[in-house]
Image (cartoon, rainbow, N blue to C red; front, side, top):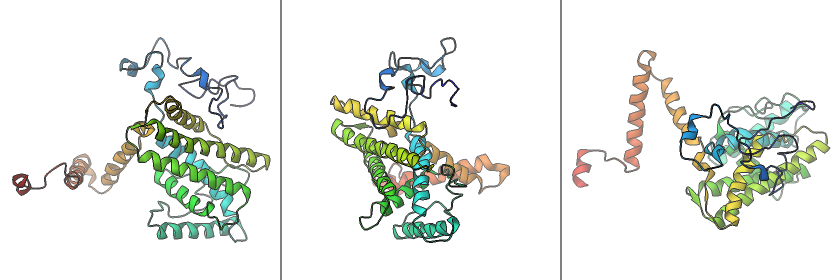
Length: 317
């Protein structure tokens, strides 16, 4: 909101963003919005959503709607963060102008992907990829595949955490941040639905360390007059996810893995039939897509031993 506009808040779970309740305290384990959790219902009393008829926690009805870690990070904070890192890192490459420096950065990135056998997901890495028309604007990234954020962060950790690299303080701090967030997701994806207290505390600490580094990067960039590391409201959502893991673990209680509510698999499921639809005749598109999907699914189910592939297998079973 502008200086003269009144904010009505940015969170359905708490009063963050409302008057006197800031959401930018990313370093805090007890931010100003934490005591306001579930103090105010986000729903209209006259027309509550139909979802509220489902089983829910009394006095915490809003928690039936959970934050999606995939859009919070991979298609949210991660795009802004990695774009700012790449914008700052590009300045270390040789070249007479920004386009030449990005050309060398692009070569370095594709060389990394080839050496590590990773799919880049990009055909070009330029200032347009970062949606960074000039140094007077914040880079925010213009890609729409979450896997690109993942591979970019792996590339950044490899380059910014190299002990032999002579990096400016801003990029050194960015290296600490990207190492923390990569470790956070690596550990998170290794867990089941319920995470035991000791492990939940370790995982959440990596995430909180990233938020502290991000807050420092935003402050230092602001003081230097450089529009980098923009703090977006999704930082608040990520703060929620981390504290929802940390607080129960401090009481010795297991917590839900936030990936439980992630839409990542749903997005992938939608994307695959979408690609199939571009490979069949439009006259029987729906039928052919379903048939091809069933054929592809069958082979995967057989591979996972959920189905037997032939009558001979049935007899042997």
